[in-house]
Length: 607
Image (cartoon, rainbow, N blue to C red; front, side, top):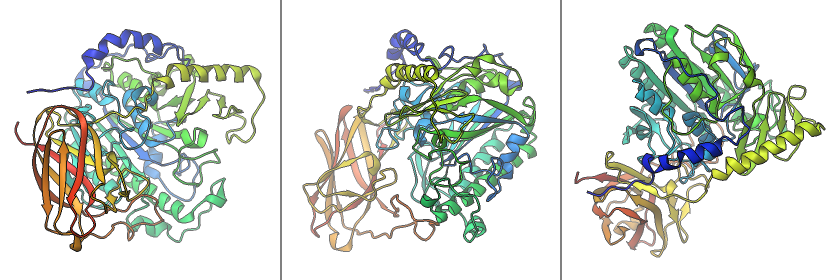
């Protein structure tokens, strides 16, 4: 038996000392290490439970608590009223980097995350996750929702510290009603609207583990498009006058705003379901509940007048609320005004829970645990937080923001970034800090494509979706957004679909093909090859499927619609360990067109 790993902890340990010294150069705070006191170790029976809500594309202005009068979010608001509100909390401009920073306590540039799809969303394998720490401390760990940090093991969430996972690993999903989902790396079908479904699974997990500490991560996928929401929520908004508009109102799409607000009210009801269950089980008092968003709003809508939206490194693109409730320890209506960020949540939670972090690399984040518990921490007043995406870098202090174009803003006096100021001393300091970040942190980010892993010895199933493949010739993606796309217009036998893969363990793999095929093209023969090994399958059975999603969309979409693709057994192929190209081709095309392709699934059959 042969097994190769792309990255192992053993090889990394030789470089940890050098990497740690380099990490200390950054001017993020007085130190890049956790910035926290040595945690007081709690006995297991005294450790609090943890529930983390992370919404997708919800802005600071999408809550009644933060001043939006066009919707009501009483359950989320209650977290701030009965706990803490971190007023100046910062995440990344887009989805996958924020998730990586929460999981590791480190800037996403260090973690290998440079894109939101086609492999660039994967979290480096030598990064330890918050789930691994809580799992090692005896917690039952689970995630329900959008993962977005890698699909194929060992990038899959059940390989990164979660005992249970239910959701989808992609960056977005094309249909929110009973779609194909992933349960512990096995394909399954969802039940009903995805946010309701994810929440139901989380509640079941909490019920099953109520007698031992649990760590539950609920990364919801709304209000990210497609703009779909059940009728009971849409009916409240479909004809509603929107009284609070975007500061860029001429670009605001009212149907999109209405749908987003309806989706936010659905999220709020689901948060309420979890809070109610904690009350029923008498767990609320000793459960830490956190809620934050992964980036700014996904459209021009009310956002407190802040500059920018999703994708921007300005305040409107990276500022999120953070609500933290822990009735046993955090006083109601606690307000934390110093800057903080997603990088702070890992060190904060381990300190609050009294467990030791299982990470070999130093945090970029600071623990804000003492502040949440009502203590003054002077070091947090002088720190800097960096927002970096697609080459754009912005630096935030408690008073100022240096924009990516070099303009300096006094955020206290001008929170909407309307007028740059002239303060040479401060600007010089932040320009120097930005340069140091680029030299010591951003420089770690490599955009060199890594192969997609196939055949992990402990996890016999591997998905190879169209998202991760490259097609040549006239084959087209169904959308410019790869995440939930499929390939179509396969009209030449010369054209192929290819993946750069790393087979981790040699063996025999049964392969399922997900396809659509027109009646006139029945008899098409497709071939799958890797190195010297190949299998062929004649597709005698056509499969036609209509695009799904338009009937449920509340506002026009830009992503691909989806289809119900047919699954067929292609046969068994022998794969040798090592890297190379996995190639799907058409060897016979009797009707002039080959299949529409969604994905391959490999199942190890000789273990």
